[in-house]
Image (cartoon, rainbow, N blue to C red; front, side, top):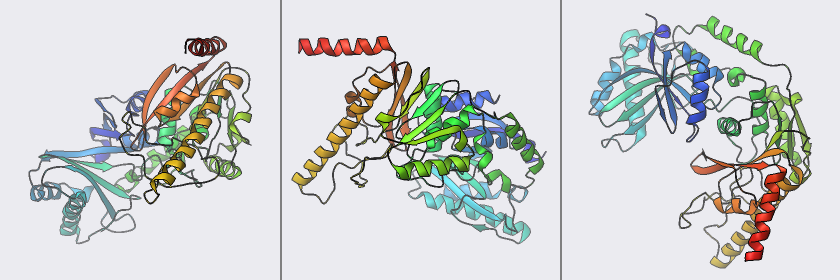
Amino acid sequence: MSIWNKKNTIVVTCPKGVSPFLKEEVQALNYPVRAEWDTAIQTEGTLQDTMALNLHLRTAQRVLYQLDSFSADTPEWLYKKIHALPWENLLHDSGPAAYLCVTSIAENPLIKDSQFVNVKVKDAIVDRLRDISGNRPDSGPEKNRAVVHVYWKDNRATVYLDTSGERLALRGYRKVPLVAPMQETLAAAVIMAAGWKGESNFINPMCGSGTLAIEAASIALHRAPGLLRNHFGFMFIKGFPEDHWQTLRSKARTNALKKLPARIIATDINREAISAARQNAQTAGVDHFIEFNICPFEKTSVPAGDGIIIFNPPYGERMSSDPRKPVSADFRHSRETPGPGRKIILRKSGDKSGDGNRHRGREMKKLEALYQGIGDFFKKTCTGCHGYIFTGNLELIKKVGLRTKRRVILYNGDIECRLLEYALYTGSLKNTAKEKSLSAENG
């Protein structure tokens, strides 16, 4: 039986906290969910099935097709077991496709350096290919062709073909990322968590390089996120069924909508940001579906009717309920209003204590005013909509001045964040104002 038609375990990875949304996507594609973790979903299917998963999944990072799982007590046993697999039936040993990248995760007391595992696995594979064909393919860190992944925990090793190659967040449209952009898979998860599917208006003030608006347009149009990519890991496996792949792509294009039932509006005060967002949207083929405007977020036009407003403001500090934990250490300072999702350093290692504290205080005041301004914008301009803030700072959330309806925990890299939902209906806003008034009277 061809490897392309052999059913086996498939592990689909994702950013931490995103697995509930990935699970929905996998099930919507009619694949079973056998297990769920914080950063992955386990399903099953053939190697050919991985092509559809790579093409359609929005919140996934990688699609890993399991080749084998075995006991391996030592690096020598790992080499022996991997060398025994029929790599000559899977990988090219000559020509432009004859290239291999190995990645690994090792949770084994014998291993102190993960690169050691990568080299051991790579040697086992290319040694077998050389022994059989006389050719030894090139290898390296680039993931733009065949990629093999090994997970070695204690005395158990599992070998996968990484059918994605480069991570799926790299859609191919973000040519101008600007500072600290939100990853595409996380943006898709944020939109899915908000429950938006395109039936109502989508407004994204402080849009930065446009990732949220572009992902929203793709979701509303039912456009497969993998259509813009030209390279996937599965393309470099022997026997790649290109005709089937082109059929999948053609069907995905046919199923996409030609127009939107609602409006998508993206604004930013920074002219450079709007220029970058327009260029990225044009590359994604959705620029004519998004209304871009240069203005402060307070001046963003909010159409009448139902809709959602999503902010991704700067976080200031790493989110933590423990104030003793350290602040994120990137030092980037500008006189301009910080961009969306940007991490602002509130201290610098070389600063004198007094100067550092004063700088920290000034930056915190700016951020507090920003979050308070977002709350005021919600109250004054967004009645009848649902407001959302994606942030990594619990203290700044308090400055919004509105009661949250729902909180969803997601991670931006290693930063624990919250997607906060605010119901901006007249009754809820009046109740909030009344509560604040009573609080002031009782104070």
